[in-house]
Length: 370
Ligand code: G6P
Image 1 (cartoon, rainbow, N blue to C red):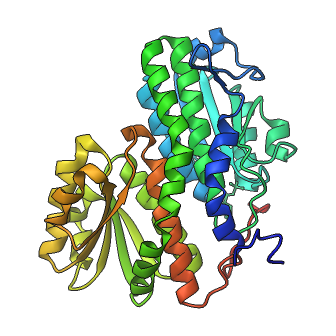
Image 2 (tube, rainbow, N blue to C red):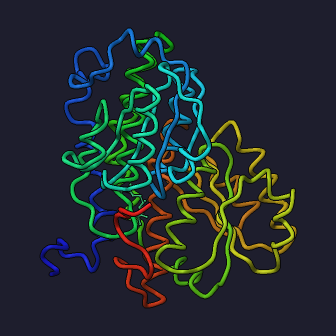
């Protein structure tokens, strides 16, 4: 059994460590080294169709939905088309406005989630082109979609999704660059710049994984608490949501993810002496604002751990209790790095509490009922 776990104690830890490879595999064959552009030779979407897209719906559940929050925000920035984010179990019951110039992107690790499949069918019945980002090429969702981008992360066994989430983020970035090129919203040099940064990610994840011990110590501390908060702005907020979900899924510690600027509109009432707050602060343009939100919780007794990159460590140390430094990349790629310490945090907290890390109570890897 340890053999199939590649020497790791749990599938989840193995899969966390497989992320550098998953990033490489998801990029493999999709970057033209001569032109420094993204290529998707097998997509059915024509350049004319890509130029005609007026809105994008992203439909998914759970962690795949969180990857959609990150990926959709990136695409919106790169191609300047409005993107809406839809929890699949809600999507088709709210009579969504789907037109032929709506691209619907469904995201699913397993490709078998019933709610997501139902969303796909609703979209197609209304004439939309459906593109699936999935890890299982022969799945129901892959079969029924009009286009498929396979994430190539390899089989994911642990119920808590890790490498599938990050490889979905990579796939979204590739898709965004591909569409930006066709729609002319980015210069070739800008595209090449993002691609170069993406190609450094696997190595950067390796260096993050080498610092697992410090996250482990923090996780043991966290495991003694009943409630905690994750805060962030922009893409940091999307990652906060995934970090919070991961922790709840396998450690059963209650946590909430909050848009840092929204805390003061109610949730600040829950901040009391000693409550841990994990603040993601990787987005340069929003850093100052996030720091002022950190001060709000500090003033009410919270114990804050910030995740940021090296350049800001010294600065942040003045307002928080601890800092975990991640390597620097472009702001839009930060989620591919900042989520890794949060995955490790959930893993080690679950371990410290003696839970079944790979098979949390009440949850299934793939949910085929609506
Ligand atoms: C289940 C799993 C989650 C997963 C969600 C969507 O609830 O426990 O980890 O994110 O399904 O799964 P999918 O295979 O569609 O990505």
